[in-house]
Length: 99
Image 1 (spheres, rainbow, N blue to C red):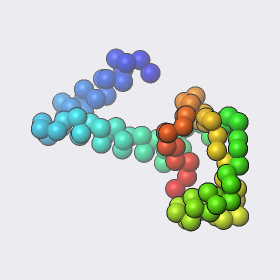
Image 2 (image 1 turned 120 degrees about the vertical axis):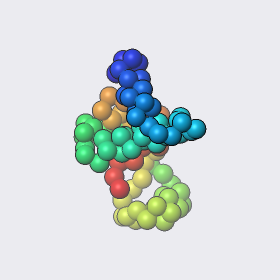
Image 3 (image 1 turned 90 degrees about the horizontal axis):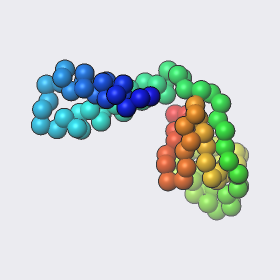
C-alpha cells in the first residue's frame, strides 16, 4: 500500500477521535483492531510458505506445548521465515495462525 493511502486512514481516525492527549496510542489501538478484524474474517491468503524447517528437540517441544496448551501429538518446527499473503515474517516476530 502506498504511504499516502496508509496515512489517510490514520488521519481520518485522528480527526474523528475525541481523545487528544494520547492520540498515538489511540491510533495504534484502532490499527490493531483493524488488523484483528482482517485475521478473524480470513481476508488474508490461506497459503503459508515456510523456509527451511528444523524439528525442535523433545524437551523444548514439551515446554512450548505445555505453556501454550497445544496438542502434544503434533511436532513443532523452527523455520527461518514464513510468508503469509505476500508478507515475510522472520525470527523474533510473532505470527498467530489460529486462536
